[in-house]
Image (tube, rainbow, N blue to C red; front, side, top):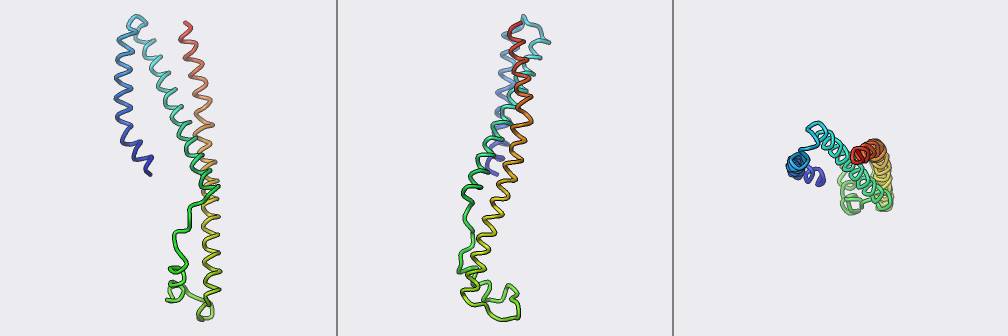
Length: 153
C-alpha cells in the first residue's frame, strides 16, 4: 500500500520531468524532423514504461519470496486466544470447557494454518509478479532493438 501511495505521489513529477525532457529533446533535434522526433520519444516512452514494469515485478517477486521464506508472525498471542475460548465466544463441541492443553493445541494449529496461508499467498504473488516481467520484457527488447536501428540511421 505504501508503494502505491508513493507511485501516486511521484507519478505527476515523473510525467512533468518527461515532458520537459521531450521539449528539450525536440528543440535540440529540430533538424531531424517532427515525425522522427515523435518516433524517438515514443520509443523511449515505451522503453521507460516496460522497464518500470519489469523493475516493479522484480521487487514484488522479492517481497513475495521473503514472505515465502519467513512468513510474518501470527498477530494474536496465546492468552488472547485462550480468553476467547474460555469466554464462550467460540462454540465448543458438547458444550464443555476445553482444557488449557486443548486450547494450546488449537492455538498452535491456528498459527500453523496462518503461516501456510501466508506461504500460499506468497506463491500466488510470485506467479502474478512473473507476469510483470515475462510480458513487458520482450516488448522492451523489441523497442530497444528499434532504438538501436534508429540511432544507426
